[in-house]
Length: 70
Image 1 (tube, rainbow, N blue to C red):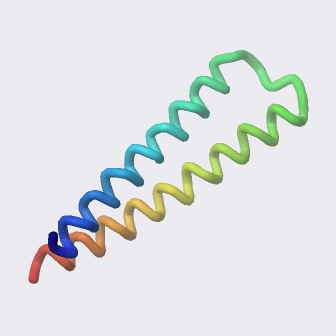
Image 2: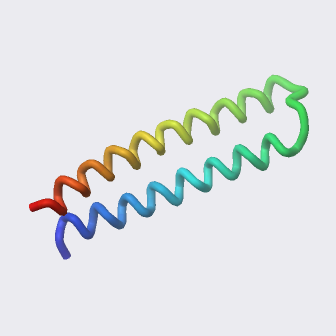
């Protein structure tokens, strides 16, 4: 198993995690207007997790690309 294969599996896992958090946020928004501060905080927390996971995915994609070139 090469480093490129391991990084590719990590890219797929982090992309799926990003999609899961994105859909969790969409479901949360579909419940209706934000009428409490706790719900707004939960939505904001999901957005920050999505952004962090996207950054992780992009970083892993870059590492995978560099590892697969050699």
